[in-house]
Figure 1 (cartoon, rainbow, N blue to C red):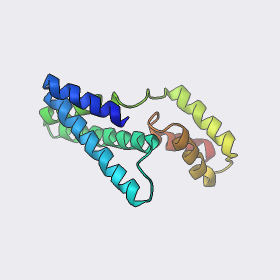
Figure 2: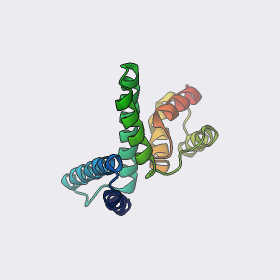
Figure 3: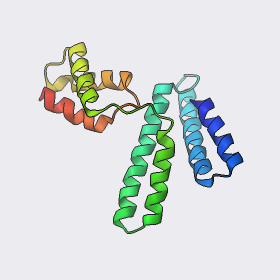
Figure 4: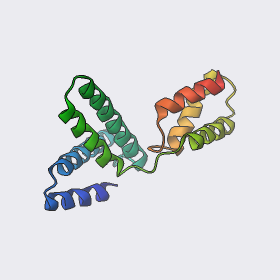
Length: 149
């Protein structure tokens, strides 16, 4: 993933695509920060699953900012955040549909043998390990809670 982002940054720099360059630089900086944090924790570098989680978090932040800017009437800033979301999404795997998410939740519940809301952490852990970057864990959490509760 690091190589893909670096190559995309070089291509965007050559094409003089300012929005893409700035977004890719932000992504690269966030990845370097995560790698530094991983080194201090004793690992060589962050795993791809951790990077997918990081990119998902970046998307969520930008979507929230976009909503705030739109409500405040700052359409140019809202559009900028939207463009950044599109660029970051290019590096994430395809998102699961609602039906696939429900199926994955059912499988995770069966896999960990969850029977009550107390087992929610185990189910979410299994989902995050298997579907990092492929589902919205905020929505999944609500669905798991509904099924177990």
